[in-house]
Length: 227
Image (cartoon, rainbow, N blue to C red; front, side, top):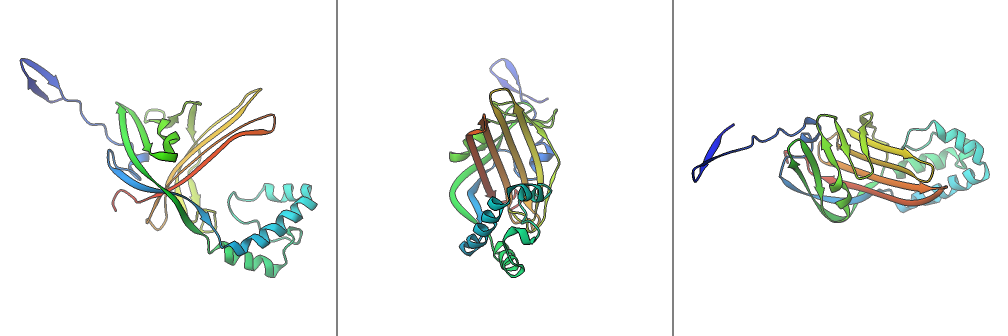
């Protein structure tokens, strides 16, 4: 450890902590980057097919629940005649789905900081301030939120037809089901496989007795550290 003189005293200079690898792949310490909060939006023409599927699901709820149970999250269901779509309708639906694009709604500022030794935070401005409450602990590999500890779960390896497109990343989750309230909190950090953008995805859901109390979702797109 190096020192500097201050009057007659010697003051230590704390060595800088190395950014945890799981964060360094997407953010540089103390470097501010601009991000866009938005959503993936397919063309409006797709809504006529979504309405048909919703009507079919309402008419045959038990079958739909069973059929969709094994489906991959965020990916269109495989075609089945019970979905209320002809094969031609389904092919047109997929073409429209493949045309979905990221629609930016507002700007935020993102910054990776180490407020205390061995404690990391992703500071996000504006609507993303909730994410700023999370703290990453390199020793446990988990994030801590006011609700509890978000534990690392399986890595993300999403294919092109997933809702966000082809991307890979890390994800953490907190789940608590008590007698009175159920809480689920997720954080994911990753990048598109083409390397053009990074993603920060956050969701907080709370419900009680089947009634939803809160459902906050954020999709933030930003540039990788090397750009």
